[in-house]
Image (cartoon, rainbow, N blue to C red; front, side, top):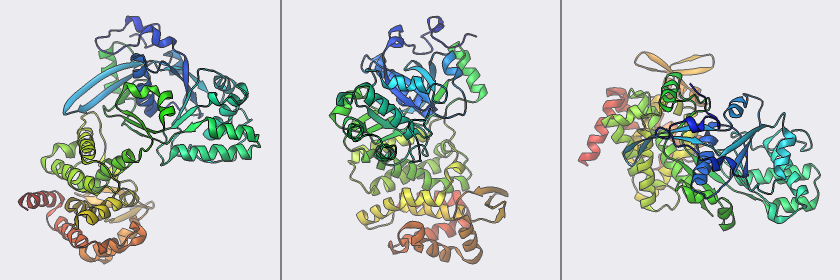
Length: 506
């Protein structure tokens, strides 16, 4: 079977995959991207490719591989081409779409091709920098930008910017729009602060530091798309048989996509690919998108995971397909969490976002495991759900009923019964499961000493855990305790079913 490359494009069938035109392969290199990961290929690179097809952005991407792990031979063999297989549900309809993305022009190794990376900085076509170097990539480390290459991602980026400053003699029109996509709050602001600090530590001239700060724009951004990456071997083989070619870079993604970028009109003009897809949003404040994702998507996952796992469901999709658990998760998100978001969001916007999230949860191509979501359960619950809980109670003067049940599920999940190799394990139907939480020992001790009511009160009162004494919320402790005792007496699934019946009756 033929392998995907520019030489084989003409032999491929457009009936099974959307192919690029020859003109797309000759577009100028306008983007420098740090990172080769699947999230970048599945979201920013795909969106730029889509814009190129519409004649909007008209630019390609030079990718810099920053780490030593892996290799770039597949990118070289395939001339930067890769297939994105988009699968999922949108507006209640199943979507299957295959696209050969041609936005990547070439991939350079920072370790062995650093001089070539610096030459990219001297190109008048360059306008944008994108990065995804994982959450630990945006950190200040002692770095010499004159090494080849510098150690850290901020060090590499500063070296690129300094080379550009020198090449264009400080021309303010040659500054870049820099969009990090690392999943940390205020990623652009943090990157900018590190760049400035590194510039001072490297003794760079004041004129460059002024150019760095005034001619360049570091944008906060938020990315949201599930991109599992390369599929399992059997699915890969089936997809390649359907497509008619081999692709070592073939990538799966869900349908939903969001790239929210904080910027002004100047940024919007540079990032003209925003026009090509409603999933790209450039505006002065993106906190609304961050709050929606944190409170509704992540928050629903967190308040559902223990309950759903103990009710006998391994994956999010399996729970959504069940009448009882599916109804609970929907009600938790739309009736409780959506209404408690501690940030002003128009109701129609939050309701539509919730509908999209529920479609994503039902995606038959994504196997998202509840047990994986329970990792660092306590910290996630505090970060994602406490502010929403407080916001709901303040707004409606009552306890969000589904959230109270979800909290009870958390307490039951945290009942460690045995410890092995410094890991606590709970028990479900005679099988053990790991409790991967730094508070696991704390809960194991409480479960050995206290009954359900005492344990609930003790945990909810622990302001070190939650930042608040949650027993001060009228009726919350009583509801959580009642649900917890019911689960101990009659089982988790039956308790959720009874709760939903009571809600309908009320």
